[in-house]
Length: 203
Image 1: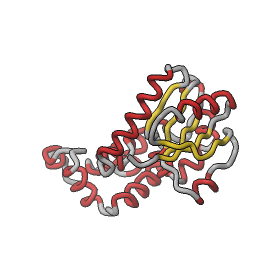
Image 2: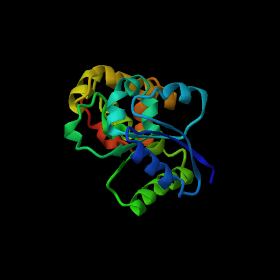
Image 3: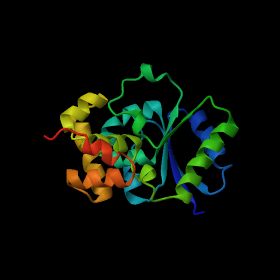
Image 4: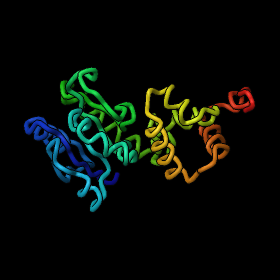
């Protein structure tokens, strides 16, 4: 198993140091750098290869514009939750992140979750469910069903701009630009069935 690299973007110094101590107990990963919630971490990512970003809710909210303009970051993101989600106004959906953990979970549960994430990627690094985020898979399905960007945005309670950013990221990852190509990809990877596609009304 290759060593996975992590950075932390966590507001609380104690929570940050606690997470470093916890991650250091897991074989196969290394914490490269720690940042406070408002410290700019993008320049660091631009100069180094990082596998995962552990970021707390408030930092995620603070940097929402960065995630909207760089949706590929979401598939590297492990969200550290500690506040109620309804207490935060999010411009980017937390359901798009790679995984989430909660500060109040016990140590063994947190370690098991992170180990499971690393093990899944080692077992099947090219799996579509790992290659695309859950939100991207949903968007591929809806595109295959013939929905427009605006219809997808309304259905998922997103802005049209966010949907377009997701689609651009999907196109970049898969190298597929046509709707018919995405539909074939969705069928082959069991995102949608051929029966569902065949039953769609012609547009």
